[in-house]
Length: 188
Image (cartoon, rainbow, N blue to C red; front, side, top):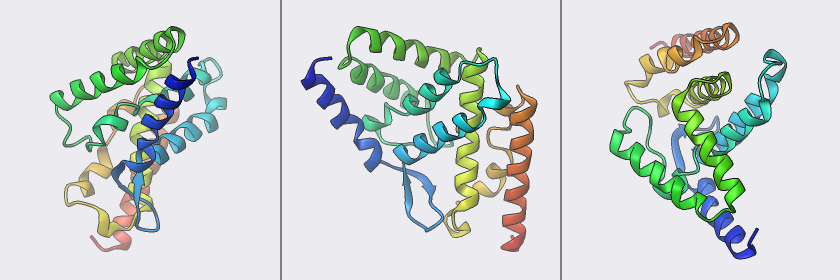
């Protein structure tokens, strides 16, 4: 790989460490996009035994790269993201991938297309984990950081994406129960 493109690419995705998400950490600090992607990849790694027939390296790569575009666009919460925002993020991914050698560009472009289509078990697992990571983050964060709409959303967000597998469906239900308990503890 060309050294300058390698460094430029790394300098660009470094913004994922700086760009914050709508989610907050358990200590009340806004979470970065990079922190979300890192934990999402760990979630995939830790459920590998549940999916022995899946290409878990592919799932982990999906988790690590899925928000690359946000290095250029910043994060827009799912409940605010428009089709125009999605298109801009896709263009940002294309700009980023143009810095990489053809083999990486081809591989990552194929992964982005697979994630968008949500037809393979690997893409479905990535997407369900991505949705659930957001719910976990909200459950960990102080409830004072929740917007009014998030009380309902934390009970339902990603539920449809988790229905493809009994394991993700059950995990999503467990997270819903955590949300209910958090709200009851706060008497909401």
